[in-house]
Amino acid sequence: MSQSVSINKLNEHVDQQVTLQGWMARNRPSGKVQFLVLRDGTGLCQCVIEKGVLPDDLFDQVKRLGQESSMAVTGTVRAEERSVGGHELAVTDVRIIGPAVDYPITPKSHGTEFLMRHRHLHLRSQRQWAIGKIRHTVVDAIRRFFNDNGFTLIDTPIFTTIAGEEVGSLFEVDYFGDPIHLTQTGQLYLETAAMSYGKVYCFGPTFRAEKSKTRRHLTEFWMVEPEVAFIDLPGLLELAETFVSSIVSRVLADNRSELEQLEADIPALEKIQAPFYRLTYTECVDILTSDRTRTFLAQQMTEFQTQKAIIESRISELETQQQGSVKQWQKDKIAAELIDLRSEQSELDTKIENNPKHAELAANFQWGKDLGGSDETIISMMHDKPVFVTHYPRKAKAFYMKTDRSNEQVVENFDCLAPAGFGEIIGGSVREDDYDTLINRVKEEGLTPENYSWYLDLRKYGTVPHGGFGLGVERTVAWITGEKHIRQCIPFPRMMDKVYI
Ligand code: 4AD
Image 1 (cartoon, helix red, strand yellow):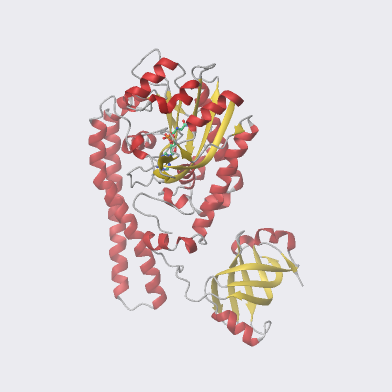
Image 2 (image 1 turned 90 degrees about the horizontal axis):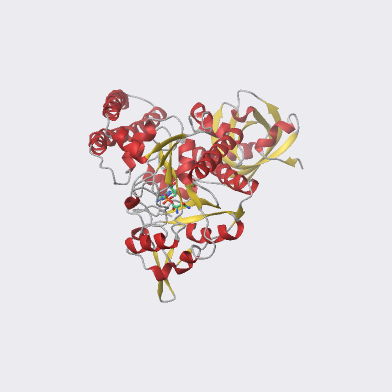
């Protein structure tokens, strides 16, 4: 019996006899040799099977095996630079474990709808695998950062009795006859714990019944929220920039090959270091309504139209080829490229349609409104590092945010916008710590003060300046990987219009 090893450890076994266990990603015949690419969850390895080495009937069975058949393959490890993963296996034995026939996801492209309905299988694809590995690192980096910096983990409840964010985005649950809600944020509970431990964080699933079908919205997402006693806004910004930089540098260190595979912008990620840009909301409004933004959006429109023309000419070239006499495999290749190009074309159509709307929204932006998705995108497009936008209008923000005592129209809050058009990944603030001001804000928002009595108590018994923020995991993973839609950044996405499996 040879030793069972994983593909990512093959470099330790060159010239040795080993057994790999996994699934067949590809199988290509070439005369009397079968090139079978095996994946085992740690990597890919080309297994070279020569006729005559295996018994004839086994060789024939292997030849006919379908994509995703599971097997154990034994052979000698050879260093082979040209091969995927840098090693090859010269096969001496194959044990078929579970044959797969007509695996629905073939190497040719499929539409999003199809892949989402096959999410249980799509998770095996190389792209999803790489995103999952990066998500794993992001989550680990988050926990490490807080654990290494004196924070205590507090698990806040998922069933909650009060609203922490907009009441309209609460999911109601029938709790033995009483209506309660799924958590939108652990923050209010976390504030109570900050008064016990000083520095705390919670990390878990979060639910928002937001009626948004955008690429940035899920109804169930993961959020990490730190909360710190005795901190001010500059302190929070410093914490957030050190934190975000630490996540990005961990991914760069641990997942370079996955980033390369996903064609993520590695040089742009290498720039993500403190200090980040700092703009007030009022400065953002000035930017949005300026000539700079008008010119910027006009340039973007020209770029979109140029890209669209290139794509359209390639589509018509491929359509002509498709009608000619080409072999079946060439037809499949053309069909796959056409699916990708048509999806890019439809994305560009949306951008071209939205550009004038976004330009109009920006030009007519009125001080006092919350920044919308398109406004954030514009600001973030103009920067190569994350941007902190601080001091939003009090009226546009949550009741718990501290009113700025030097300008009562604004609050001491911030959003962190990831660069290059990605947009918001963090929202946070200093909390209102004065009892009377807070109770007035609760009433102003039409909330019932009695429901918040325990939260208000914190301001009665040893109140202190404190604050925190929340970072969305899926948005962070999407930004780092360059994935367009955050639904690809969680294994089983839940969206407003769709829950697939
Ligand atoms: O800005 P938000 O709403 O902040 C809070 O919930 C605060 N209570 C956090 C705090 O101060 N402790 O949300 C924080 C982050 C956003 O920046 C975004 O990354 C993510 O959570 N997020 C979503 N991600 C995916 N889908 C949604 N529907 C999201 N809503 C918010």
